[in-house]
Structure formats: structure tokens, C-alpha cells
Length: 249
Image 1 (cartoon, rainbow, N blue to C red):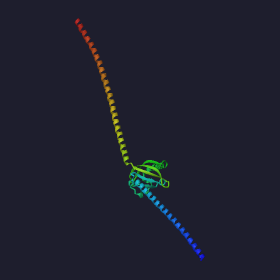
Image 2 (tube, helix red, strand yellow; image 1 turned 60 degrees about the horizontal axis):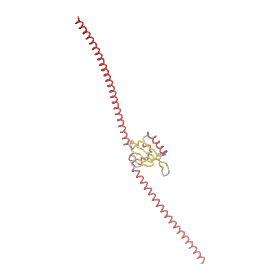
Image 3 (cartoon, rainbow, N blue to C red; image 1 turned 90 degrees about the vertical axis):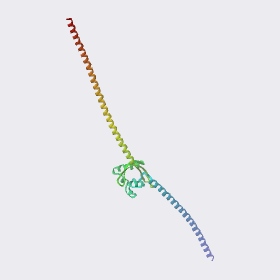
Image 4 (cartoon, rainbow, N blue to C red; image 1 turned 180 degrees about the vertical axis):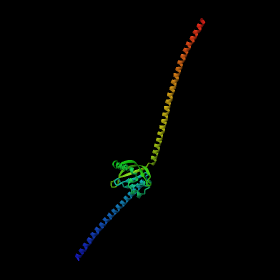
């Protein structure tokens, strides 16, 4: 009986110890679970903040009046773009993702684009004017500012912001035509003035010639008058002498 009692006491002691261990483990589990729940909650909050920040950034990018395009310079694949680009280009999102950047520009500008990509990778930024080909084939002049950025993995990407410069090109063309017309009118006026000046010089030369001839004629007339006067005096003297001789006879 004593031995049985000792066995029972030993079992009860072991049960008590085990129960304490279980309870302690349960407390640890509860604490771990609470910590895990806190971490999950914090993670969800962080994810929601990231999502909210991304939505805010996307909304800002989509609200830009300029086109926004990020692409991988190594693969040439587009990564992100805004709604403005879809609206201007006439391409749907799925269509945009199918084409590399060079698809949207004329072949004669591809080398220039490659040079701009190289400059951006080397210097961090660049500026260029290109003709964007929209879905219906129309070419729209754009001015692009490119900047080198890095994605979450640290891989270099290029962000290109483009502005439609159709109106500016139209204004520049009008200004060039106005300048050309002005230069033409100035040239015509200069030619008219040169012709008028030449005519004036001819008139002056002719007037001088006429004046010289008139003076020469007057001089010759004066000399002739002198000769006639002299002849008159000689003739008159001869007649007077003859009259006196006749009277003396």
C-alpha cells in the first residue's frame, strides 16, 4: 500500500509538472500567437500603406498631361506608362505591352533613340525631339526628357516624359515663314532702292552732261559773239574810213 501510494504521488507529481509545462508552453504559444498576429497586422498595415502609396503615385502619373513611360534599356520592354500615353497613342494597355519602344517611332529615328539611351545610361539624363507614331499612323512631334532610375532590385531603367510640341512646331513654322517672307520683302525693297539709286545716278550723270554741254554751248556762243563784235568793229571802221576819204575828195 505504501508503495502504491508512492507511485500515485509520483505520478501526480509528474502530472503536475507536465501540466505546468503544458500551461507554460500554452502561455508561450499564446504569446507567440499574439506576436504573430501583431506582425501580421503590422504587415497588412504596411501592405495597405504601400498599396495606398502606389495608388496615389499611379493617380498622379495618370493625371499628368505629358506622357510617362518607363522601360528596361536592356530588354527594350516597357514596364509602366500612364493613361495619357494610351489616350494619345490610341493603343490599348495590352497592345502597348506587346511592342518595344522602337515600334512607336519611324525607322530613321531609331539610331537617334539608341544614342539617347546610351547618353541617359552614361550621364543620367538626356533631351530629344522625336516623332511618335500613333495607332492610325499619324506622326506627332514630341520633346522627351529622359532620366535614369532603378527598380526595387537595383536594376537600371529609363523613365521618359514626353510633351506634345505640335503647337510649338506650328508656331515655329509660322515664324520661319514670316521671317522668310520678311527677308524676301526686304530683299525686294533693297533691290528697288538699289535700282532707284542706279537710276538716280544715271539721272545725275545725264544732268551733268547736259549742264556741261550747255555751258560749252554758252561758251562757244560767247566766243562767237566776240568774233562777230570784232568783225563788226573792223567792218564799221573800214566803212568810216571810206566815207572820210570820199569826203576829202
